[in-house]
Length: 69
Image 1 (tube, rainbow, N blue to C red):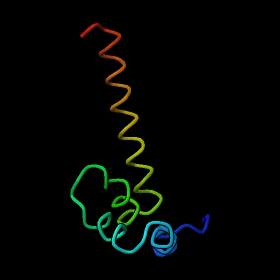
Image 2 (cartoon, helix red, strand yellow):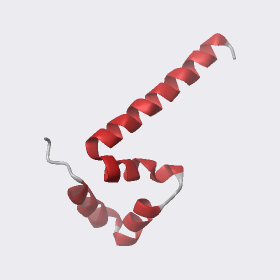
Image 3 (cartoon, rainbow, N blue to C red):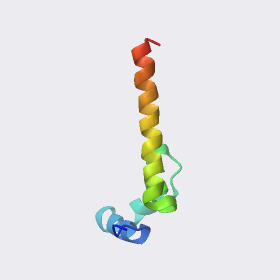
Image 4 (cartoon, one colour):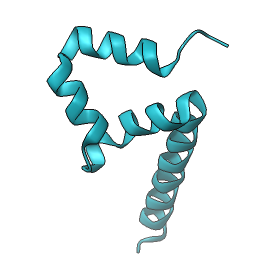
């Protein structure tokens, strides 16, 4: 649709960060690597679902803060 796919993203990432860093992002189990892994496995829709999930969490946090919990 907009020309973004895993191969293109990976190629750009390797160019910017280097192969070792990209390999670490692809295989890392840390939560910081979640976005990179979502893009790899689900493409644009995977990252969209991740964003919706995180905004849902933010909404819950804000609502509980407003309630005084």
